[in-house]
Amino acid sequence: QVQLVESGGGLVQPGGSLSLSCAASGSASSMGVMAWYRQAPGKTREMVAGISSGGTIDYADSVKGRFTISRDNAKNTIYLQMNSLKPEDTAVYYCAGSHRRLSPSRTPQSVYEYWGQGTQVTVSS
Image 1 (cartoon, rainbow, N blue to C red):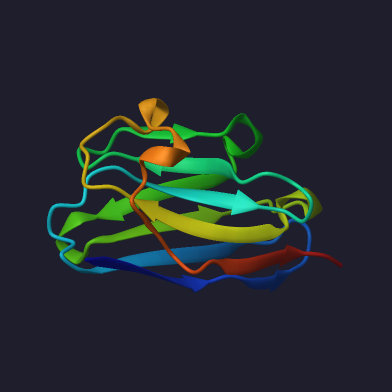
Image 2 (image 1 turned 45 degrees about the horizontal axis):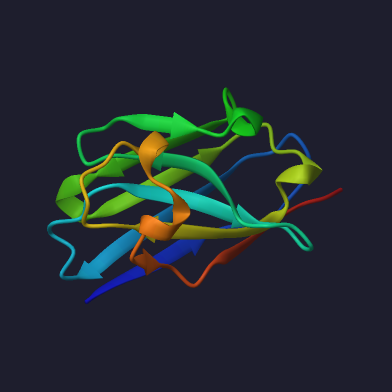
């Protein structure tokens, strides 16, 4: 079994930056595609950014140029650097992982076997 543990998040003013981390433990050595999702109040969960085990990356249009996803396979950890944050980025952010070696752009939400507990990101003045 794999556990995903997120850290980071919090309250930041518009235009500010935050960094999230997600560490996979347990049987995590064979993790394939991983991603960050978010869910705002009253909205459906949406993919923010995804990264394959080989480093192929995909972003939601709403965060391109502002967010950066990265991965350290040796540590079984992915990161999300969020810059130029906007109030509409406010949401609970979830880490997702799968053993399947897929491109993030071809990985629907339902494929991810493992999910973190979520971390709140609030962008407000």
